[in-house]
Amino acid sequence: MTTRSVLVALLLAVAPPAVAMPAHAQNCAGTSDFDGDGVDDVAVGDPFADGSKGAVHLLSGDKVVPVAVPGAAPGDGFGWSLRMAQVDGDGCADLVIGAPYTDVDGEQDAGAVYVVYGGGTAPPERLTAPEPQRFAGFGWSVASRGDLVAVGAPYEDEAGLADTGALYVRKGDGDLRRISQESSDVRGNGEVGDQFGWSMAFGRDNELLVGVPYENDDGAGRQVEAGRINSGSVVFIDDVLAPEITSTKLDSPADTSGDRYGYAVAYAEGHGYAVGSPGAGSVQLLDTARKPVRTVEQAGGQAFGFSLAAAPDGRLAIGAPYGGGVRIVSWKDTSEDRRLADADGLFGWSLAFSGNKLFIGRPDAAPYGQVAVAGRNAETFRPFTSKTGIDFGTTTTS
Image 1: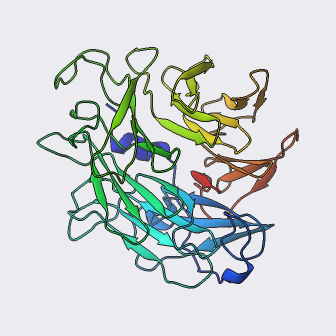
Image 2: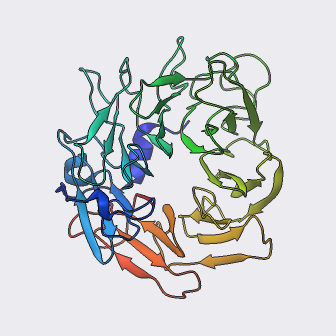
């Protein structure tokens, strides 16, 4: 099993605190305009900045501008996960930001999520689990569709099962609803170390695709350290708001120990779903009916499928940050297969599309971490970085 300490060590951290910026709702244009300047923005996380307090910056035109929340403390990991959302429906993009190492009500690393409202019309809002749990990691992953927000807590324990995982969903300003593999009609057996909620992506309407990359394919019943270890799975929850949940579960198509199928997931409206298996070095593409279309593979132990980003036009960016660069493929055009390479480092650790541009995180780039911006057919990258820190580019969203 991968431990929290190993994952933290991978992120190579440090960077600065943040300052809030004004925005004006009447000037916002598009679903990714946070600051009201009339153009789409991209947010970048640096979760171990400032003594691991964390930081989030907005790439706004040519500017790199910090985004602030009150109350963040050293060790919180603010910016570990990020999503643009339309939570309050005022026309400006809002930011949903995970801080999974936040202490809550005396519970160490219970985790929190901040909703930072664009347009400057409301102060940031902090969300926590109704019953905060020590080391749960609430905010490890976040997903959004309109005003529907999902928060993953993959280290949450339940029924004596350590790190079995859970997720929480909220519509608008409503209450959080908890869902786990112990919930009625959620497929799969909740087991020690499954980490249900590690990754998430909303599909059509209220459908949620949930990654369970550390699940073992071990047959029926509850078993631990048996079968194919960490082969992984995903669960499709048909409607996270339905009174009675229905769901479908898919296991790793390779069905091999260490696949980590579900480590990263993505959805492109009208095109389909993507599921990364960085242990196997593959990404499975499914159509909108959840039927497998094809599997894209890349050999070499480069964690191909570690990160994913889907564009509205059906393109999919796939990160292989241990020397494998980034590949861009397509659901609708199987001949499209373009590879973007960088000299070295964790190029492709995070990915986000914005219009015809792809934003590629490389958090270990000297001196402070970097996001490289690639045009659709460009052969060169435009770099962005923060003024201090090392981990800029750990997370990206548009």
